[in-house]
Image 1 (cartoon, rainbow, N blue to C red):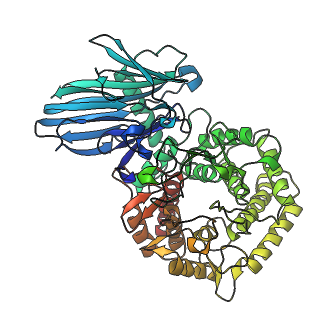
Image 2: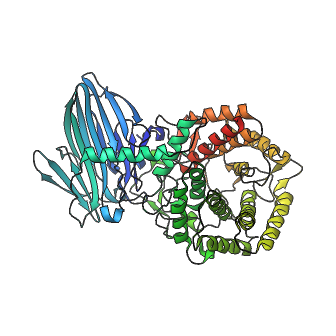
Length: 597
């Protein structure tokens, strides 16, 4: 039976991530990168797809958990009839490049608090998305046991505990009394290399704790919802690749938007939109250096013909994200198919250039100096979109139906040229500013005429329809209109009337068939946070605070949010942790702080 999505906590070394359940089972781990094949895939199936469970032998043991301070050291406290013990789960952060270290480590430190607690350790390794059962052999000594597993390019080494074969898995027991500590470690390395040296656990735990805490201490935020903002920014950092600067949209693939349905997508890639919005959130809270790292990634990824720009790339900037279905993973609660890769890489989404230029403009305003290629890149992107202004697109929600002229996309095109004009007038950069101003004016007139339903008094999802879309909530945030513009207030009223479910916001009405997919989905958390921003900016501070409290209350016990929320079953849905949800939380908290000042 699948564990509820909200029962997972994230471990991260800023190159990949693991998900740990409340019951002490690591059910998701891809190595060595976020988008690599899994070695633990029980998240999308069951134990047969691989996991590493460490929990007390007492079936009545009760657990509580929390991160140690502003870090990703997860401390699970177990209380049993015989005593109390803690498990400290950590993925050490190594500041050296992965090409140098060539290892990924998971440490599980067991600490006795009182009495005596016996633990059961159960390891089931399934490489390559559960398509490969590894060849396993015992090594080491009685005092320093090792279990080594190899399949294809991957190898794992378990140290610190003796285990025995158990039905194509390995199990063992260990016990700790008050004051005792046992360290278990699992290390990935390329199979053609010798196993790396065992870590000095005390040293790497201290180093990793200091790394995360010092990063959190740099966060510039003294407003309301401080703890929620700090944890959200930490999660955004945890989803950012240490070496390349790529920011993945989530740590998982194929967690369903509709349980039992087909809306299952791979989010372990770098969407320019999500990464640009994450960049803005980090800049606004003091991380200008991140802007430089991401801009360098962007220049590498897009380098060449701007007309070949994709809306999503691999972590290194890879273009081939071929979408295919896996039969080896049955899916979360049977939600099939499980997909790896993402076909959205081949879509045209007109809004993306606007988000990219918005983020680069924010970095410029924050003091990031232009590189030799940064402004030429922006000019090339503008020239490209100017050549295809009339082209319909797939929109921010990546519809798989017929392309349309989405109002949000048209507004983001307006944003692209608006920020280019600002760059010339406010920062002295060069460019055909008169042409950009003309295109901006033409887009504004077009949106007013075709993206607004004057009879009904609200902006519309796409030209030729009367439907609304939650993405329209972004219009005031990007400066297209004022939050209290009558057109915007009418749009909010229509969104409240047609897209709200138990106080939360759907992206759009799936019953219209716009997305070309079967099934439905749940309210989208980022959209609900966007409504908080709109409420706060338009004088509805009490409504903003009430909705914000509700949304923050949906985070799990360690502060994580997924993509959507099932208001009927009261559970998380979609991939987790979702970068867009957390960066929208940060923006909503900032909006409430500004409105309260």
